[in-house]
Amino acid sequence: MTTLFSRPGITVDAEDATLQVVGDVDVTLAADLAASGVTWLKQADLTSLTLDFSRVEKASSAAISVLFEWLRTCRQREIQVQTIRFSDPLRRLASLAELDALIDHPSATLAV
Image 1 (cartoon, helix red, strand yellow):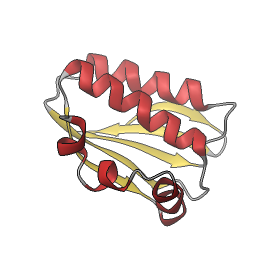
Image 2 (cartoon, helix red, strand yellow):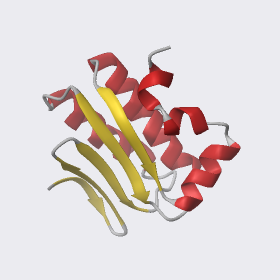
Image 3 (spheres, helix red, strand yellow):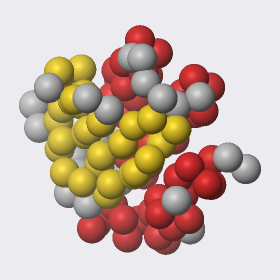
């Protein structure tokens, strides 16, 4: 596992074909979190990956913003997103934002 970003209470880790956020994302760190993942995605030799937000316990639109930035980069680099994992609180927020189809079937949704 490689740690791409680390501050007290939050990390972004990459392992194999998984990009994972651990901790609670707040608006002051969202841009740096997103940038760390984008840099890794641009350097990684991947055709598919998993985005893992299952260890983000606080529902936050900042976490959703990081996800969207990573998804944009994946689309540009033609990296297929196999799975998006969310914690229960973040899943509820994403559902309120009507992102269920994206989370459940990212490859199909992003292909449109």
